[in-house]
Amino acid sequence: MSRRGYESLIELVEREYGGLRAVLLEVEVERALREGCSEVELERLLCTAGPVVGAFFLLSAIRRSGMRPGEIEQSLEFLFARHRVIADILSREVREGARILEVGCGRGLNLCELALRGYEAYGVDVSEEALTIAETLARRLGCEVRLNLVKGTYLPFENHYFDAVLYVWTLHEMDLGDIDSFFKEARRVLREGGALYVVDQEEVAPLDYIHETAVRQGFRREYSRRLLRVYDHGRASSAVICKYVTSGEQPRSKQRGSVFPRVGKLQGFGCQGG
Image 1: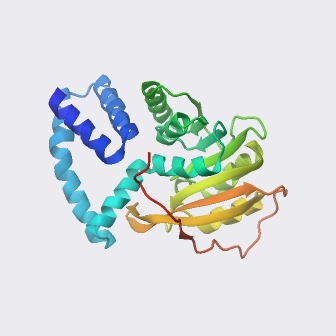
Image 2: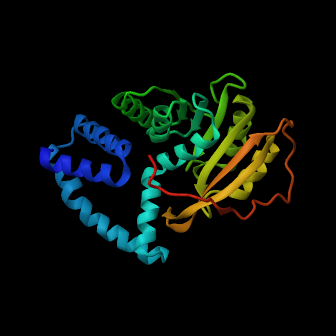
């Protein structure tokens, strides 16, 4: 790609969504070039077609969601920079240096943000390609993350190894049976008093089932809060964060009637952090 077009795009991403997202873009561009994409064609796609497609996408989002332009902008800020929001929350609640596992870590933005803030960051994912990108991103940022490829719901770690387990925009993609199995594994690898965090989208993720499963697997809900309204998966609804802690109780059989409560607004939320 031409230096001018490339640098302008990187600067725009860094200005709008932060340095980690900009480095991830660099990693993705370099990977595309290594895999044989033409520099000229890639630049034309990203720097010329990209803004045009983006304009139509955003206008469509406004029409379909009923949200105002400013709300769409806040939604995008959260969706593209939520690693900062999540790390801000965890930094207030989880001691520095703690071991944190992200299940479904993808390309590693959350892990790298946590590692740069002094946490021992571990991640598992079913995608080898995503983990390769995460490894490259961490190396480029000079931080250490520990990555594992998984093919089922077993988490390859010792009992009571982690201080926190994190699911971000992941559970809505899982079968209900897999959620149950993953939460059972999360309970096993968490130390007593450890925390399970779920960040996902209302009306997309099965939040009632997530709550019932967490309780059934021996967790106690500490809070559930709305973050802000987002437009994703073709829906305008709230991004939520739920925190569960190990309760000391043994997992119990499934019970009916457990209802995910109405979540309240998280005070002091802002996407501008870090």
